[in-house]
Length: 124
Image (cartoon, rainbow, N blue to C red):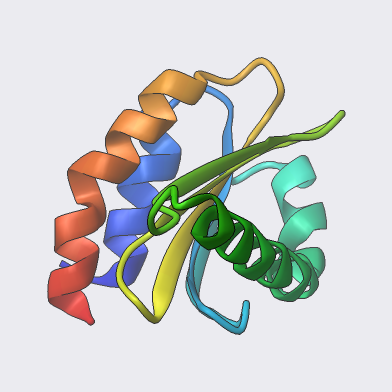
């Protein structure tokens, strides 16, 4: 199974899915898919730039977690006015991010990510 098909399964499997990307820790997308909508297409150019910025935020969350003794970061959800973003660690070098509309099914998206994370690891 390819990165594209795995990411497509996640986006298509949850209501309100806008896009998904597999990214390196530096925030650069390895592969990404977008839902076939005008709103999703508007994100295409911004996805990489946002990935770099949010990658830095995830690093800072990891440092804060270490300071608290909370262990390694596994998942983080950021809710914005127009999007919800789910970041899930795939391994030490990669994470997956899924973008949903605010009224999208966050629980289903989180479930689908967990269900497909092993397949993403296998493809790396």
